[in-house]
Image 1 (tube, helix red, strand yellow):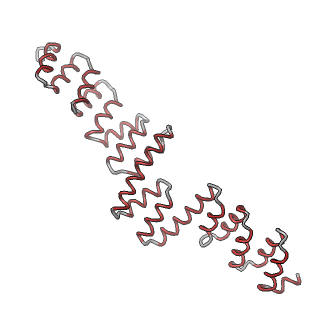
Image 2 (cartoon, rainbow, N blue to C red; image 1 turned 60 degrees about the vertical axis):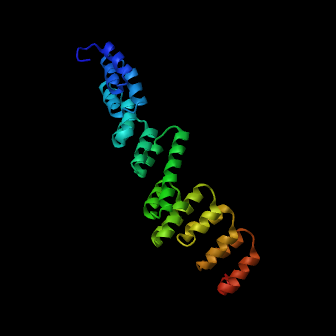
Image 3 (cartoon, rainbow, N blue to C red; image 1 turned 120 degrees about the horizontal axis):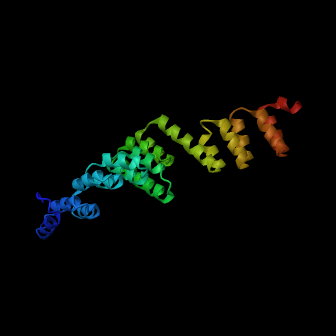
Length: 246
């Protein structure tokens, strides 16, 4: 090989199973495809990365780096808009939040969902090993508010618990589950809960909440709006008899 007789050198290296030198000999001959294939087959990842960079095959270089320097692989994949592969590299680095960011950018829905599933499984491992704080951050980033709530309960953080319940309520409202959303939000934003009860068509729940808030006149107005005059009279007589004369 020193004499640049690369074909003869390749034959010798192949017979003696000197694969590292054989890869180099292939590359010297310009047979980069054979060189990279052999480097992958024999686990010569650093050499493969070097050759791939030499020929400016950045995606192949990222592939080889993923085996021994995943942080560099992640950056290469990200710059190449290979977000699915970048996400997995970040996940091997236990950087779940960066992984989520990459998976969220995937245009392929199946890849995006598969990536999120892998991150969720990782968060579950953290949860079962009692790293509730880390698991909480990941579940929040995944918009998995129910799982985040479980972590907040384990952490005994009342503010986090309240925040999760609020997020669950608004998330359920976005899915048009207005009745359940209203139940989640009653203790935090009763006015919004009233709106959601109205959208759900549960006017009895709306009236009951108005009574709890001391909004007797509004409760009567809701009764009248839905032709429940008996209920309106009952409310007025119990809570504010002066309304009967108005």
